[in-house]
Length: 190
Image 1: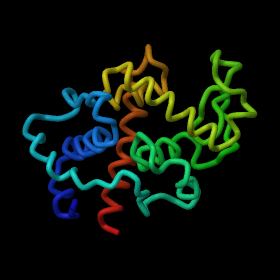
Image 2: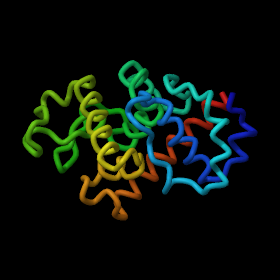
Image 3: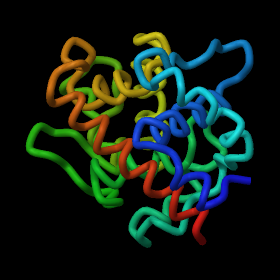
Image 4: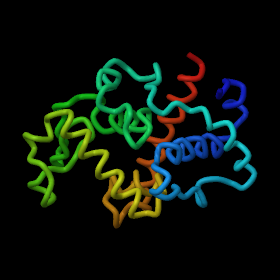
């Protein structure tokens, strides 16, 4: 069990390792590991034993009711529910009808068919289930494209794959990962 004391002893880099490691636990064994080479210092590798008991299907009480109400759409997925909640929080604040000035739509702010061929229409993306499924699909595609690096996958989700490792991509990834880490700490405290 991850205890409050163990988590608080981790450095910021250690918390990032917990995040990445929890995602590794989510992936099927034949899908390959998520890269942590650029995410953590070697001395933090010792924290691996701490993450073994993360229950990645449990939504933390950290999240507002605007996010928690979508629990049924984000639990038991290939990514930790709290990571998906963090993306949803940053992207739309849990508003299924959110549409950005660029046209990104819904809970996960997915760009519609009018902007990217092969995607659902804006109307289809206003359906929360369709939107979350597409958001997860896009995140998986980008994370796989970057060899399992979740930070670059998140950067690509926000900026597009060619700008994933720019200041904007890193800012977005760090914002999402910070919220994710806070939710894990809150879950353990609760």
